[in-house]
Image (cartoon, rainbow, N blue to C red; front, side):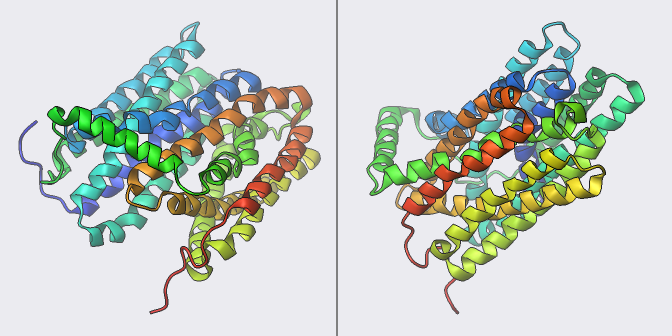
Length: 427
């Protein structure tokens, strides 16, 4: 384990590192919803319990100092990847059991904690392993690799599960195969990173003798965040800007998969993989690119309101889909592309508000706090969304999602972003 790594450049480890960073999050937060739907869980149970899986990302700032103190970032990364691979195999092994739901959920909880810890180590390693100019040069590469994980998961793996179900007629066997394939991928990825990740001289653990000082300083950093001017408005924005989307997201896959007579669209996994995975995620990525360009050109303050409308108003497509239940993939794919493009556009503003809110001498720690509140804003509304949909049906639920945009617009009106923030300065 102490042997010198093989010499590869950043292209040799950054894409694979961020692909493996994105995959477990995608498995826990998205793929699990489709899997449990195929295995017969109600929307109430599905949304409630999969929303709880956000919790590790909510509280990850609380244990991030441990990753600073205990070992190097490099020595956290590849063992956590091996652990995620083992946990994926564990999910596959639990699925045929009578108590598969409880047991697989426990394994997914452990995977969520491992994934959140891996996020901390990987992002820290990226900053330590590269000089500033290379960090800037590869930020697009790491983002693209993370997006590729979403397309692979929600597109390719959902499609694969559909092919498997059609051939075997057994969704349990299909999802065992998908999880086993992911486990092998993580084993290979962890082995590669064990050999290929560089050993930065700056990647050193903090001294345990300084534990008390480190802990005191960490508390001071947290307190400094809550003493920032206007922090109450910022927290309201982080919790409520995505209030409609947090409820919608838990029900998209069930809506696409449920039969027509239950208010859904009656698609199979292959069709969902194409429409929501490949088409939808590609449109989301394009929306993010356009959003970044708009902010760099006009500044966040001028772009914020158009982006708030972009993330909320396209949700009307789900009302139309639930009302009309159009046959054929073209209409469904086009509607999802519109909604996901708007979501990608509007989410860019959310990320920039977090960057603005975290700005200052402790920006790394404060940004981590912002991501925790972001995860909380997605977790809590998602927990009741399945119950509400089961109670009132898809059409009324999607109409409620439109009503739920009101808090999002209210917090947008309260935010006071400085003029010109995020705008690219003229050369």
